[in-house]
Image (cartoon, rainbow, N blue to C red):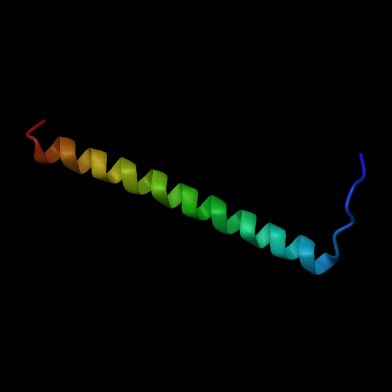
Length: 45
C-alpha cells in the first residue's frame, strides 16, 4: 500500500475541511434536537 505524502498546505486544508464538516454535522444534530423539543412542547406534552 503506497501512502501519499501531503504537503503542509494540503494537510491544513484537509484539517480545516474536517473541522467544518464536524461543525456542520453538530449544527444539524442541534437543529433536529431543537425542532423535536419544540414539537413536543407545542403539542401539549
